[in-house]
Length: 307
Ligand code: PSU
Ligand code: MN
Image 1 (cartoon, protein in one colour):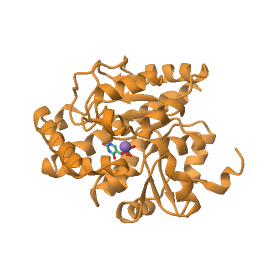
Image 2: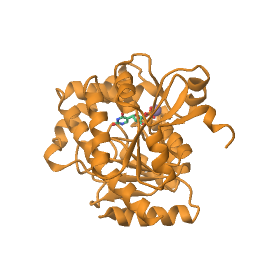
Image 3: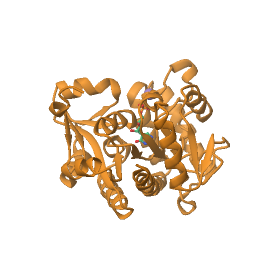
Image 4: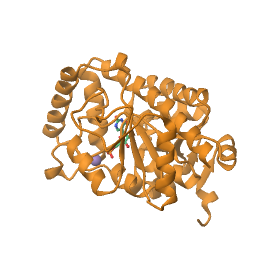
């Protein structure tokens, strides 16, 4: 690609690891700026990086700072992102404008995948992906994350699909776009706060090595696109199915009444669900991200061993 250095700044530790074929895990920043409140967001982001190191991989938190595409942030930069008020939630369509205007952008799953792929990172761990929203038949609210998964070669480890989404339609959309949905140690798709959703996954894997072998085959064969690894929240942190779904139902109705749409929709729902559960959902959210960081690091290590 032409003149990539003009735009892209890869942290030296991350660049060296990529060059040496070592395990690297990408992390997103919308979860920091729009997904969790300060200071929990910063604490969580730093601990996620530590977990990835503990499991033998190098973390690369991704964001846009002053228009620079940053792959790998310092602790100070993470703190800055967690506090700053003017950080723009940045998906694929926003990248050119955030860059040209030299603004700060927090990357979503879609844009984190794009920057990870530009830098040569294959594994990305987060909490939840965007998807087909409830009522999308009317609103057309389908996250750009799903199209990115269709085209960009990065595996995304998440805790399944949140029921702020229409889980069934999200799975249909992924199927149409050739994106495998894999259960990590489960035959059932987890629903973020809960280990169960009532929906099955396409494939179950029980080890990072199995997953790495499938990814290698996918990309060796030129089957472009990503893969969703759905890793259930640890039992100890699981929420009560009815409590969380009641909160989500209330939040979805409020969003509809208040006419919340477009990119505001997901952050609104996340914040309301947190309020309605008295903060319980935030604790669960943090724990499932840690669990995904661990599996992400294990997968990155297994993939590196295959090369
Ligand atoms: N789901 C979560 N937490 C999050 C997000 C989703 O549980 O922080 C964020 C991710 O960055 C995801 C984005 O990529 O929301 C999706 O937003 P949208 O639906 O506007 O595409
Ligand atoms: Mn949307």
